[in-house]
Image 1 (cartoon, rainbow over the protein chains, first blue to last red):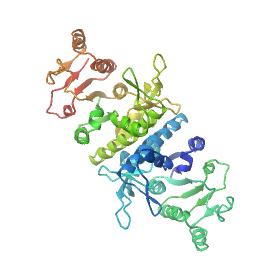
Image 2 (cartoon, chains in turn green, cyan):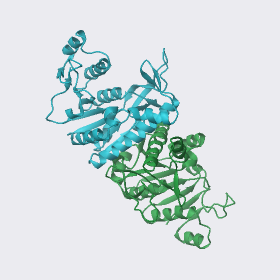
Image 3 (cartoon, each protein chain N blue to C red):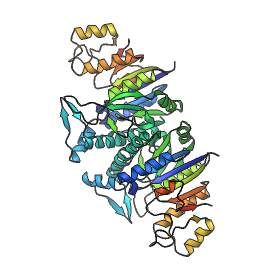
Length: 258
Length: 258
């Protein structure tokens, strides 16, 4: 099977224009077929607050009411996504910006109300990997923002890490698929206070050991659960680290395999 | 050659949710391959004013400074475009929302500063009709907002009527292309005070006559100039009227041919 790379960047890169420009150059130089997924960052919160919309958080998670969804659609789907596409075009990457509504690529279901009503938040149900592949086969590079739809005309806010892993699982039907999760750290760290204590390789066995030793905890726990879910469902390799892992020289990041 | 319809709607439809839903149903039911182009309307102005950005007008035309361009990118490229795509998906039209930056579809040039500096406004230079056709051949329905790019990473605000005619001229290399300009009136009117005085057919000769008689003036003049430019450059038919012209029963609109 042909190789496909799916790269995810978060708010820390999007908010820093130099970091974003550096990243987009690395992404453009990445060999082979590829997909970009981006989160939103604080831009949406800043614009919401200017518009007089308060950000509501429950248990540390944002609640997406109708007004917040509008801001997210404007900022992630418009401002961030389309500027990134324009910059990629300038780097000769033939990008196409997408939400999950476009070509019905990612269908989700509004999260059921239990203890908390998260509002217009969607959990991914179905990735139209054959449709996404039509874009890739046409030599276009999909750039997804963290918005999906329910198929009934409703856009939904969806976690960008989840979009990345679900799209990767879908594309694994057609490609030898790798994920690159770019984030602030150099990778999964043995010692959170030592940024150079990167665990370079984690397989299922090592993962269990790290869990037992309490090395994987807090914010890293859902990220790695998400990774192993993808790995068990067909994704070949997941790489976690800073954006420099996209350069060929660097091997100081975490590689996750089955 | 196969038929292709390019439909343009303006702010009056976008701002009225019922009118928009009705239109999207008519558009979805339209036979054959098709493209939608939408303007922005007052939504951008309202959001800009909430964000404390003043709309600047020179000679009745909006000046697009950097802040205004951001709002336009958010509102046209995000909010309006992506909600329309989600609604079209619910109507089983496999829509894909685009700016001219996506797949490098519409390249433009920042308008040179003469008496007036219009700011980040682009005049269309090149339509990548073969790339747009890859989407159409994949059974996707392109939905363009009124944003283009300069190829160097800069998005630019571009008139939606111009985008429509330029995309139509491009697609005429591959298709028997018709334009539908949906607007408030039933068509070109002989008597501006009589909404039923529709001129049903205008060809080059009739156009000259209407010009001589002063029937075409003011706002209609640039619209029709734009139409005849498209007709002379390969577009087969241009229809002007309200959205009901998309129904098969209605013939009360203006049809323009060479």
